[in-house]
Length: 293
Figure 1 (cartoon, rainbow, N blue to C red):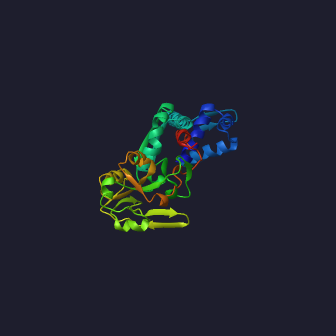
Figure 2 (figure 1 turned 60 degrees about the vertical axis):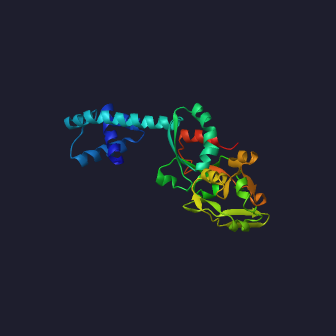
Figure 3 (figure 1 turned 120 degrees about the vertical axis):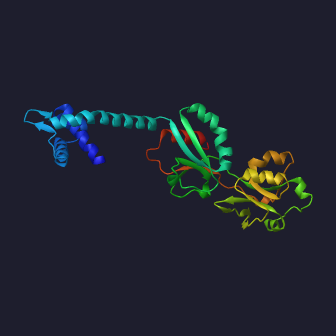
C-alpha cells in the first residue's frame, strides 16, 4: 500500500507539473528517482500514463482518466495527515488511561478541574483497575500505578509523595479483641483482605532491619481499599488502608491505628507510558499537570 501511494503520488505530481524536473523538486527527490517510479507504475498497470517528448510531458487518455479520480483522493489523504499532525501538535483529543482506583482519587481527581480548565480540548477516558495492565495490548496511552508494579521498559514520572499503608480497626472491634503488638499477632485477628494482581495481597511490614510479610486471613477479600475501610468501620476486622485515606477517620476516633512502628513509607504513584518518541501534546500536558513538583 505504501509503495502504491508513492507511485501514484509521483505520477500525479508529474502530471500536474507537466515536468519530471519540477515534480522532483516538489517531491524532494532526484529526477531519475521520479522517472523510475513512474515507469514502474506504468509497467505494473500495463498502461502508458504519461506522453513524453524532449520538451514536454502530458497525461495520456488513460493517465487523464486515472488523474480525475486520483487527485481528489490524494488531496483527502493530505488533509487527513495535516489534521493528524495538528492534533498531535496541540493539546487536544482523547487520552485513554488505566489508573489504580486509589490513584484516581488521590492523584487524578484533585487535579482534574485544573487540567480541564487549562486544556478544554482534551478528554481523559479513564479505566480503573488495581491489577497491572499491558498498556500496548490494551491500547492505553498511559497509566498511573504504584512504582513496583510498573514494567521496567516503561517511562515513569512520579506524581505523588511517598505512601504508607496502615493497619486499622474500629473502637467497637477492639472492645472484644486485643491490640496486636507485632505483625505475627495478626494470625489471631480476622483481617480484611485486599486483592492485588488477581491474588490476595500479603501485608508487608518493616521495622529497622526486620522485614516480613503476613498472609492476612479473614472473612472477606476486596479489590478496592475503600470497601476495606468501610468493612473496618463496621467492625468486620482489621483493615489495611492508605494513611491519607483514613487520616480524617483516625482523627475523629472512628478508626484506631495499630502496628504503627511496623508500617513504613514507600515510593508512591507514577504516571507511566511506553515511549518519549513522538509524544502527543495531550500526554505532555497531563504529565506537566500531574508531575510531583
